[in-house]
Amino acid sequence: MQQESITIAGIVQPGHQVASGIAKNSPYALGTIEMQLPHFQKLGLDLSNYFLGTLNISITPHKFEVYNPKYTFPLVKWHPDYPAETFSFSPCQVVFNRIKYQGLIYYPHPETKIGHFQADSIIEVIVHPIPKIKYGDAVELKINSSEIAIA
Picture 1 (cartoon, rainbow, N blue to C red):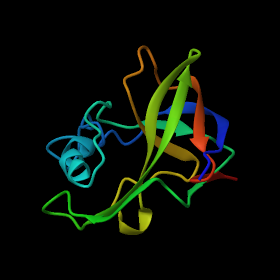
Picture 2: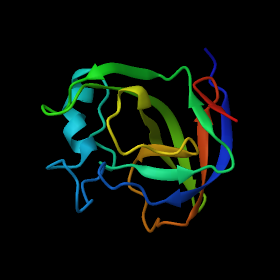
Picture 3: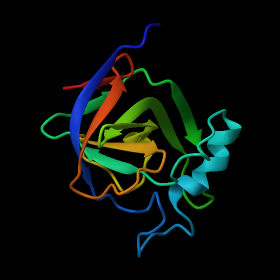
């Protein structure tokens, strides 16, 4: 299948900070991404070279839908005290200051998630470290339109 790329403008927004593990009241000993990492590795997706947190990108007034992602891992039991969750990932690029950074759209399926929900205009991205990026910065997000729909 041929990859069709589209670019959408976005703004970096603060998230719940549980993915990175810096939230003060997080129920997780580590960040969720670090805790999920070995489970995704066993399923064939290695995230160890990425920043172990998410970059939250608002595409308001647009919304997105994940419909044909490259990776979907159903019912991953990544924490002993919480129910299994389904995760999907779609390759993407974040463009900041005209530099492209490889990443993956990270989509914990809301129907299996127990908390820390995102608005449907916030795309969570796991990406290589981006120097000097901060909340409020403008970015471009290049996505595969055969995997992610923008409305």
